[in-house]
Length: 91
Image 1 (cartoon, rainbow, N blue to C red):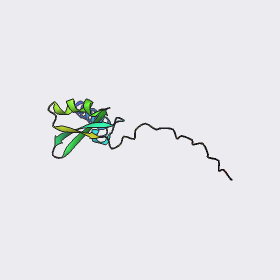
Image 2: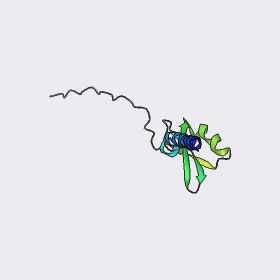
Image 3: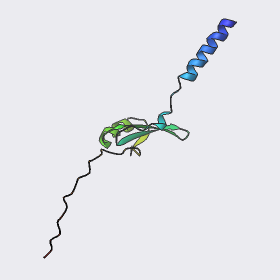
Image 4: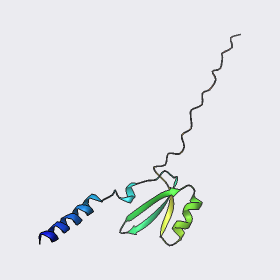
């Protein structure tokens, strides 16, 4: 009896500690996402595609989803350019 209780406690602890955040909370660093429907209003955002052409085959393959812009994508950061100051000419 103690052994069964101990095994149950170990399994419960393993399941509890092994939980990960939901996949819907993660947005990748790519500009395009494949959005798949899980049914009952649930969706999964798979944001790993650099172009809509790379995303489209994964959605068309029967997953009943669509391609969408990644709302968390910020794009590459461009350094600010310094403009030369214009000298005012006094005549």
